[in-house]
Image (cartoon, rainbow, N blue to C red):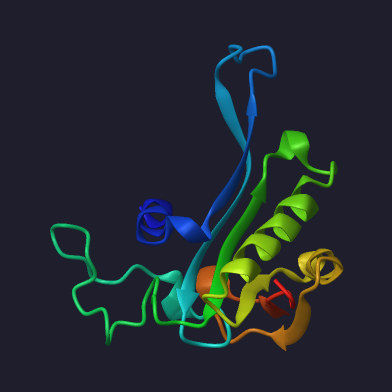
Length: 160
């Protein structure tokens, strides 16, 4: 439900890597998702518990109180909150995550509909995100899924 909400609310902030017809069980014309980034926008500097949630939606899937409900995607937000960067385990260690993040940052920097990128990361992933331009801001106040996260920020790329 959460991923469906994010893909519906702001598909322009999501990116996937697909391969076609590769592997024993995949037909030549079939596509397989091997990596993805799913994001929303938030009015806060950091990914927060509220930005991780889904707002109250009406029967048509629209946010009931878009100007006051800060849960989920807030179009007026100036921070792109990256909720997940996922690479299929069969394709990890092949630089796909690095390439995907670099492409994502490049694409959204051109659009200029935000001021920064933010995410929360486990301690062992902090060096990975630092290598692609994020800066650790220390332990996060976000308690999503038990907490223990680190806030990470990256600016939009200049001259785009």
